[in-house]
Amino acid sequence: MYKILIIGMSPVLAGTETFIMNYYRHLDTQKFHVDFIKRTKEPIVFEDEILQKGSNIYYLPRKGKTPYTYQKYKKAVRFFFEEHGRDYDAIWHNAMSIPNIDLLNYAKKYGIKERIIHSHNSQWRGNAARFVLHQRNKRRIKKVATQFFACSDLAAQYMYGSDFSEKVRIIQNAIDKDNFAFSAPERDELRAQLGWSHKKIIGNVGRLDIQKNQPFLIDVFHAALQLDDSLRLVIIGQVAGAHSTVEKIKKKISDYGIEDRVLLAGSQTDMKKWLSAFDLFILPSLSEGLPLSAVEAQANGLPVLVSDTVTKELKILDSTAYLSLDAGIRVWAQKIISMLTMERSQQETITHCFAEKRFDITKQVKDVESILLGEKFE
Image 1 (tube, helix red, strand yellow):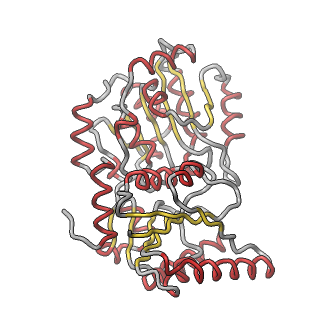
Image 2: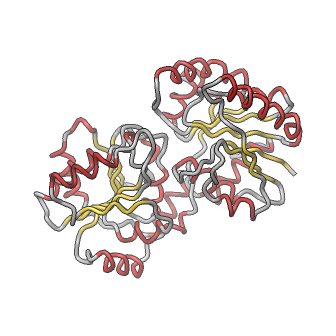
């Protein structure tokens, strides 16, 4: 049994957590056992499911800002790897940035043979002090890790640099596309519940923080409303801590007087139903690794409009389009009106394109299994 220790889960459901669970649920349980490290005492998302599947979840504290908390952190990490380090064949660190690579260093010291770093972002987000640490560790990571993963070329360049690209494996943010397949009955039911059965609904999915750029989306939507009053907007996502834009979003909605045309739906789990209810998916992010929400939208057959900050590897279907944030609000509004005339992609097309571009989890997980086991694969 090949044993893997995964880092990257948190209490908030976002792209990295979704990626991890997609692969975790599809790994061959006859060959692999997976355990997790969490960095918060709060339950991580899907914690009950993970424990029910027989995996362990170990809590390790963060460094903290005082000598006491730092010493407590060092003691806990050292004790964990002394007790458990030699139990694992691989440690898989999923990260948006690397201001701290202590866990990989300890993994190396205590004999974990495969040490994987996996980049899930394409642009720095954080304070200056942590950025300095991140930049330093970008150089050090190449001597600590044995495998270098990224969700896209942009994410690889961000974490490892362009001169290291030949050593990086792109692991697609693959999904079980059938979980997001279009459902006409669910579309009709939800649209009726919303009172928007005969409206054109635009959907956005993402944390309410700076990166996802929803305040800009409100401006664009208001401009598009001037062109077509039947438009409605749904934003699905949790409020994000220090970088939250929720108050700014609410103020724009109020200032424009469009409270009855915009729904802040919070966190949702039944994405198949919501995606089926939409007519267009839009993601004007300032930066992305490779957004799983837009992959899921394409699995539903939706036309997708994203900012050109997003990697071109996201384009699975021909109905996915890119637009520069510098193009301006009016151009974005006109593009929305144009794309709302497009029809959904059919299931046959979706199946073919997801397989061809390696976004089908049932196929992609086999490649990851082969990488972990050191086997050759096509």
